[in-house]
Image 1 (cartoon, rainbow, N blue to C red):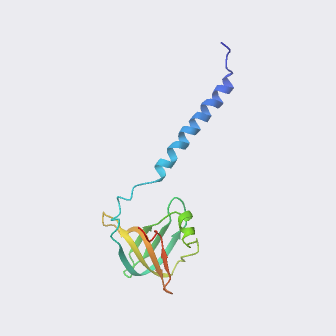
Image 2: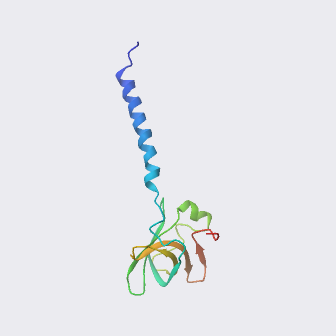
Length: 131
């Protein structure tokens, strides 16, 4: 039996470890929608956009209501939204919007963003209309 150089063994072990670690990441990046009251759309008018976060794996809208309470709305990925007409410039801080969302089941201020109505009447959908 021929001896395997220690250096080659270390590289093989490192590559195997990187593969195993890479396989674990996709599973941890996604979660269930069980935290939202899926299918029961609520709406809030006169929201003021505080921040529009265009990042993977999900976008976020942080906004304040008329009572200055902060809300957070999770949305689809930038990849999905760009195909639906959204961009990183769709919403701007200070902009007034109406938000349609599936509320969080635990009662916190927020949920999953379904649609946004802009001040000019434009409706921006997050989910396909068949959902």
